[in-house]
Image (tube, rainbow over all chains, first blue to last red; front, side, top):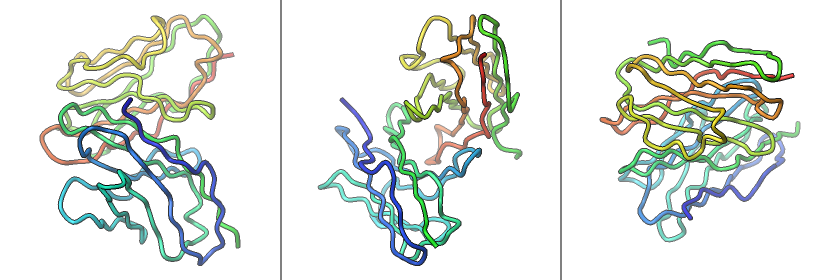
Length: 113
Length: 114
């Protein structure tokens, strides 16, 4: 079955430490890939997206993600986490030929002072 | 553009009552999604429309749920009759099929059924 997997439900990092959030997908073809962030009580905001081309994409707030076709992964990274990054992060995929947009279960990020 | 607009932001209703959630997508977007978010089940895709036509409603939990998109600028999600287990945050999102864009989300409607 087609799916999006975020293996880590909850991650805690210290402020200033590096961050990597994992995302794997299971689809027959390369989908469009996205990372969204959700702060408490808010809607979802796009951090970055991948459609084609360079497999390392830069997003807002200092985030980046790398698409690895061989691993069916699209992991999100940030070199130095700020306390304001505490939120829930969602990986999403869209199959370009049917517009079906699915989300992973989300990873909650806690930032320790 | 004001973004995706959802109304109401909060809704409290009694079990058995009809609930209607509304969504205005971004002008020019021709694809619209309805999602439900709960702690237990995360973000679930309920239904999506392309060019006002429902494409996949397999995520709609029961016949109590129905969604319509009478025109390109308006969609509704109706629950009739509502039950306490329908309590959740419901999000509407829109995107363009014609361009490589992401989906833009509304602020959500927090529904509480008592």
